[in-house]
Image (cartoon, rainbow, N blue to C red):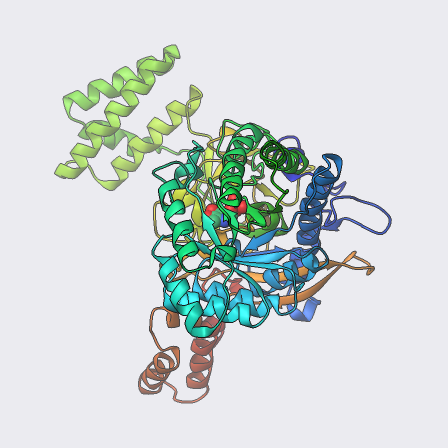
Length: 637
Ligand code: PLP
């Protein structure tokens, strides 16, 4: 656990148990009524074949813990409640969840259900997000806010106004000045009095990766001049009472409470000015930005860490709003935040298997191969070979490296010209590797091939270099014997992970037992990527036509393993991902079936077996499957 810094990034939800497996504490504590769940047992339950009591799901697998979600939500609320109470703040906190962080139906439904006791609402940034937010909030608290952000057309604004008609507490936040005219026109047509917010472009700038949203040149929001024009126009139309909310967002992963307080303080000044100008202001919406500590370093100088706790975040926000409002004699506003990353990141774990490692055979050079090889060398290459041998005998490290590299280059040239054969080229590789290994230079880092697509499941690593904690979920009581990087199934050189938390370029890993689980009958080696519950699922694509993972939902229970799988969904099949690119799997299958009937030899049972085998391929997930489950081999046999 120390080696992988689990206590740093994982507390209070993840720990290592006495069996050397990752344990999940869904409520962040371990008491008699709240027990730990052994993650390996969950993976076995999900992936073991049905006839051995499992659910027969294929990996990769997302394991969701709704209880973690509940705990995150309650912790956020209680942090604000505490700050409000202890500072004598005279209004409440009422958050919204930005659905873009994870639009999964069950995640959003859970958040609405768990948060309804404290009026927790939703934020949408597009029309489909608004539709899902509207339908989910029908089961939420009537006071829950439905904040409508993002670029808006007539249809979006009409939908938001219809939501108000349906008694959903909807606020249209102006991101562009032009949206105001549409709001005025459509609300008159529909006969709905809108509730309007403005998104302010703050001067406070967050300098980390996610800070490009902020500052005067940021993509979103209205400048001071534009806000003043909005106020004036609303006044003209006798609608200034509709302006009730001020929104801003200075970027995700705000690194420190100092920067946070600076931004919130600036926004609170704008809020007070809007009150002075006659708007019926009620809510200050501080956007997202509540960060999480991906590497456990509690550092404010890194994009993947933050230097504050939930409580420190909430206290800094409440204090910054209170100070400004008290100075200006303005009634304290309701504080809303749009925290996404901090709510959903912890609740899901991506589990995948390492299926093989790069070859680690001892380099071999046959005496015969070497003799031929020496005879065929040019004079320059022969000189390099002799210098390399002499340097190796003297243990001269730098000279060995120099001549080994030079000799290899010359031999490659000779191979390209046709004066060296493949055996000789292999002999020079073996010789150089042998010498370098003898002087302790050979690269000890192995490549572990993992049954995963990084483009589908960890797109932020590929796209923006975001790091997530990745660790084996078992064998943590065994010292890892090697270091490795992870290479995925896509035929793309970007499909590898060679940067890890803590600035490491490789990960301590255990030797695979035999061939690993997928290709042989040996025990599987499972790895988990943690804290990836936000953003990753919706961003992922279908590169190489790998689709999303299987998903299980796991809740605490009183059963023998202290957990129950309450939902299990296999990932998209080959047919499903083909459909995404406009192929028609049913037609494709018919075409191939005709071909089987035309060309299969015995015309009898083999036609049926091959056709069934093909149908299975369309129905299975695109990831590597156990050899035993290949229906085509069975058919061919
Ligand atoms: N609100 C808005 C307007 C955003 O753009 C974002 C994300 O960037 C969020 C909320 C969520 O931010 P976070 O995930 O940092 O909580």
